[in-house]
Image (cartoon, rainbow over the protein chains, first blue to last red):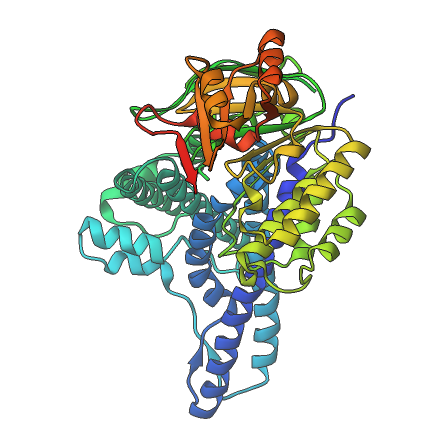
Length: 260
Length: 298
């Protein structure tokens, strides 16, 4: 008798647990935003678009929950779930989160814009995340930090679907990198874990460049030569980077010992 | 279910935790895995539960390797002294999550056990005392009704009444739903009646695997007049334990007595009785430089 697959159960459970954290995360971002709006109304200043607020905080949030996701491995193996089902389930849950967070942020921000339209004293800031990269000195550390804080951004008012897709890719990338780093620490000693952080930084920087060039966003002059490549190839490179990180995660957890 | 280990060794770096362990568990019985602290009990059980792979040797369950085998891993429940200090879920949620992955999980039985152990249903488990956390592990293991259920010292934190409940439920539920149950412990004295078979680990090696009755028949205590006892045990089998009270002496030996030896003892007015598993355990697992206990009462 063929037994039903277990990974959908893992995916569902991982998604619902992480979604409950996400509700808190979004709730806090929204609450902060509401406080800012109230103070902006009184002081006649600009407020952040809610979508952009989630855009900035979301990547770091996903990095953190990606790091935590390794702690579920022990829970699952102890409950008789294979490492493979854990991997598949976690991956699907991360994809689900990466899709749903931008959608929620977009819908709530549309509501925000609608409400603020009627309040004349407040105007909504336009995001200038993409041009920030050009302000960075020609220094690799500054460049890496900028690529972590400011992921490639498309304005949802102009191209809603493309904007949401890019947002999802950003979130998914950060989750995978958090997971990647935690696997390094789990499988090896702390020194190797630090090496995994370093590799993750390289991956996030390259991913950032590939996406920016393919989306025609501003990049530092040293990457301008990539602009001659077709967008499809660059997107493929970006995808391959994520696949590479996921392959390493799977390889290192495939037969990993669960320490008790 | 059939659990078979062949020449299983496990190394942590240079340290060998298990050395060439071979045995087979063929029937639905309760197996006692005994060994002192650091003997390799948890390492061995981790391999059976697919938490880790052996460095060398093979393990098969029903002829197949269990590691990463979804069908087999579901059939093995491994409960140990888990630290729940970060667990913010309550009992209800933990039961719910466990039930999802255990095809035979009996929620009614789990709730019954929760009542028996008087566990608070809606309090985060991290706020539980050590004993309550142990009772939760016992509940999860029993209610999962996995064909291979392993309890690795889960009863350590429980108070005496809770341990009694656990032992009683274990025997009753095993009878109703026969399965392979492995209990690892170094607290032999109060659990010996539970074991159908005993496996003894010493320094990572399997010292013996026998039916409990057969093992118990290997230890005898001879009691009677001190002089007669001394004459009888002279140059015979290893002495496990000696006690003396006035003229009466009692000596425990390791090794079966032959029929004519029993007869000779009887003729000298000596009394022969079996010795507790605990004493056998202490004797068999003692290190070379440790002395047997000799107690004098006067």
